[in-house]
Length: 214
Ligand code: AMP
Image (cartoon, rainbow, N blue to C red; front, side):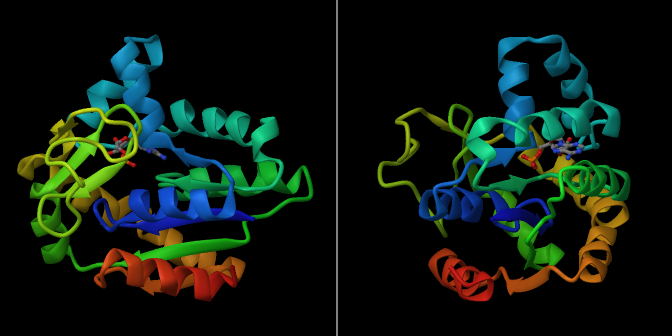
């Protein structure tokens, strides 16, 4: 099954994608995580991407799409994958569609997590992330078992630079301008699933699995 997670930054895409990936046994591919790993390692891609990420802007399409198309062509993606944070623009969605069509494939579901902006702003300040495995938590709504430590890999949790309030505002503006149009794109493709993302994470997970029949 090939899934795309849609929704504003902080809507819960990453957390739901990790749980879905464990349930379906297919890879979770987060472009944000790929960029952060490259930044950590100081690769040329990381250096270029950091300029945009730190300002809350999108990394240019040409630095993203080929990377994802390559990734989904790998062996471990044979049974499907979950794209989290990609596509984020109409050109990215069109290029992905074309690359899949060339192999007679398509996205099965685009899961759209609906959360209002004011809820997002409240969530992001309390968000803590693991820069090692990409898991995210919330100090109140979804705390890790041990304070400040990742449940999945034991690394220390941090407030990401791009989760700081001034950057979050910019990310939301960019989301409405560039990414929200994807909702109509996938509606027209006939694979959009709207999910109320304001419920508790396990309720959201149940709603998703029910909606996609797994
Ligand atoms: P995320 O962890 O998905 O919120 O991504 C963090 C940041 O990485 C975003 O704010 C963007 O700057 C960048 N990024 C991630 N995915 C993409 C994408 N598909 N297109 C452009 N920029 C991206």
